[in-house]
Length: 137
Image 1: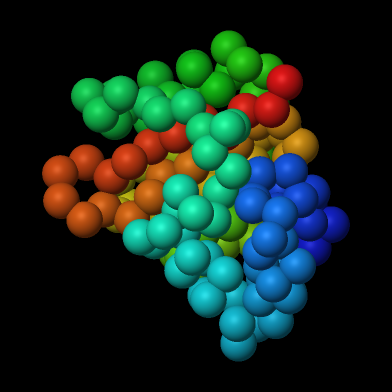
Image 2: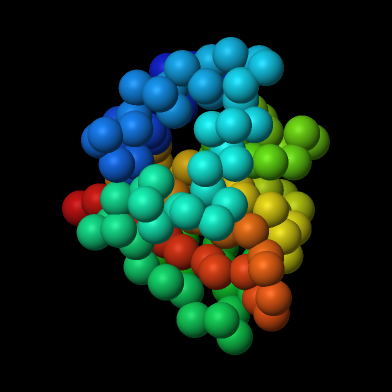
């Protein structure tokens, strides 16, 4: 885990009223899933909606999502916060992270530029899971 990167992500994209609590939960191994679990059903109350741009539901191809993120300045590498233990806390190639996360069905944040650009996939309840780009200009 990279606590410094996670702090930037939380302070940039999460609602101010819960930032300190989320940072505490992310840093405590026993509480980490609690922080990520906040992105399950209540992500619109957890993330700052003014930065959320929904990706149309028909776009579930990880390569198309990678191209969209690169269009907005994403590098080849990224940092992942995810419900999936195999992805969580990892620095990965962007396309590898997207290939594993798109369609996973559980909440995942892929930080392309920690204080500017993130891909977010919410929990899948029915149909395709909601997908967003979180972007701060």
